[in-house]
Length: 77
Image (tube, rainbow, N blue to C red):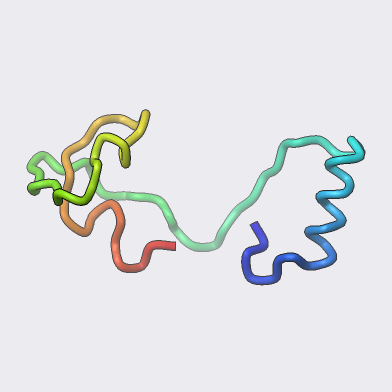
């Protein structure tokens, strides 16, 4: 993603290689942090705030109840 150094020379070179067809469009990445949600889906939900379109937020993901502070917490990256 390179959001701390963009646009660095490396990112610009990669874009040039992509546009030239020299490299493919598949990328693999990893992080040492656990960004996943290891908690089970809650069985009880909270009232969805009026300014949040919960269906739109969920998109095509498995449907789940809204829980305040659970899916977009203060440490959102």
